[in-house]
Length: 223
Image 1 (cartoon, rainbow, N blue to C red):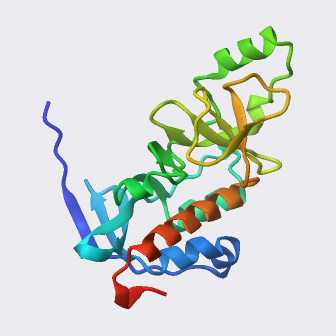
Image 2 (image 1 turned 180 degrees about the vertical axis):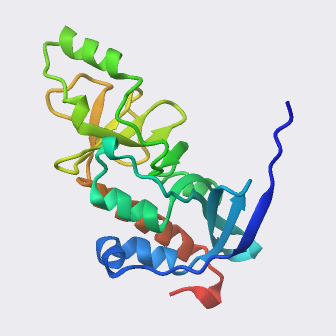
């Protein structure tokens, strides 16, 4: 069956950022305000936004985000997550070359998007079994929410009360330095060495992209 896709409502995005957003995510605001923004809709009901940054040699880098308008109450999203996606959307793709692969966006199927965020975990059975075998106390999965999934199955999630961020890494790999969480089985739950909360995660991603973009801007645009 052929799927019909119609692009409509294509135009330059006109964005406004609330004081709350600017205060909560200052580095992300610094990044987004320098982007060229293109909004478009597919089949009249799926809204997307591209953030595009110009680099040297007429190249670009950017994010493709899906805009959100439904925030299910059963997920118990933290306010910062809602604020982020209401303003920016959830990242579903990016481009820019290998230099942008060593960031938190590396190999992600999605990042931040509400419709993909989940409080169910494909790895739960393996994790609980590993905890039982090693007589370790598992984390309460009901308190967690996944907001990022890599193509290899690794998940990043936060605790809904403390807003702490953790990584489930069955291969023990991350482009950033990570440490196995105390009293957890190997190749399960890790913490980022320099990221504690959801806000830290967002701001770290923004800083990574700010640094990469600034080093590859045309000379007239550099700081």
